[in-house]
Image (cartoon, rainbow, N blue to C red; front, side, top):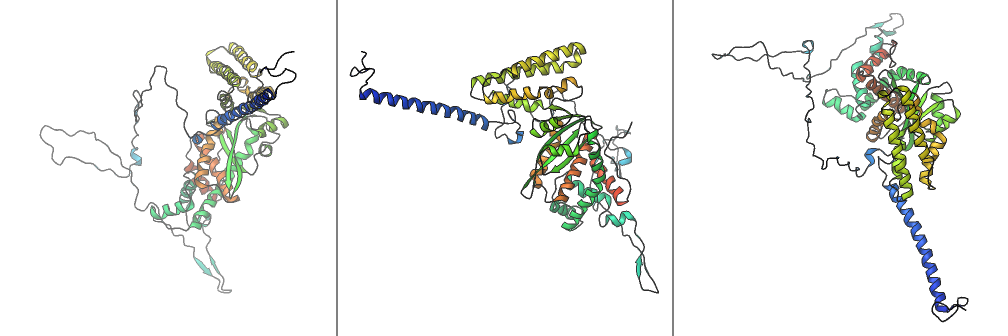
Length: 480
């Protein structure tokens, strides 16, 4: 018969003191297991709270503390001074051509000292100045006529562009529209600018009416872009929030990349796939570049389209795995990042290798990445990444098989940055008319910048055509 650990009892019948110790140990073990589980949970929450623009889809502006830049390989980073850097080619502003110079002032010595000879060259300083009254007022008089029999009075019909324009002419209307759309200026700020700078006092309501005239003038070109969306071979699509009187709407961006293409915006109450169905429809046979949001995956399931999921979003999610406290998850993230880097090193060598050899190298890099991605540990975060490759691997590698397709969705995201700034400054819209205005002016500004055109000149030409009841200019590229 074996004795109890204290020698006062047996293993079968322990003494009360040992029984109390064993109960206390069991309770402590239970508390320790609970504490360790809670610590692991808190470490995951801390890693989630530490997410920044490099480990998630959060914008860089949301980073409370910017991630430190890595030190250069040579050691301590040299502090960069302001201004032009050593070796940087100096850029100077070209002079206005003679036809744009309104006035020339020549300064010469009144008496040339002995030993000096005047040259035919000058030191030139061109100065641009506002004129005191930078607008002109035209009074349009329509003669009245009275009918001697009935006493009815009629006026001569004014020109259509005068009647539709009203107080502000087409160029001044375009200026107000440009200030409202491109400069994020409020109606009150525009009113003050006109009164203080141009000495043109107008009412708050007149500014609103002028903006709506400009919005109507931009409607034809906006609808023309909408009509050709289903015909595009490639569209980068993204969406962001849009506030309106306490409601959360969504600003959609459809970006056809290239200097000869366009960008189209739409504000909608929905963030779902029905927006894609409405504006792309079943006729769309192109490729969509997008993030991994569910609306695009649903559109993929229900339509015969190709997707290119954004690698920038995926890489940030993989980097997040390396910040988690679990070493197994960290290792999976690091292995996956290494294979992703190898894939893109191969992609960047496409122009340096024979096409057949590059195809073999790309296929090998793809297989190696998928082998690592699909051997995930039994951790939820790692399994979420692996599931993407199991379900939609082809949609991540479209760019390898289709030249000209970018692996990221940076195009529409760059266009949306303007909207994010506008949203913070203007606080959104207040109704349907404001939404239509934003959609149209955003599309014009983004497309003109993309095509290297003057947005102000396009707005002016559109307003001029609208006032004169003429065909509106187009934002579509001209046929070759």
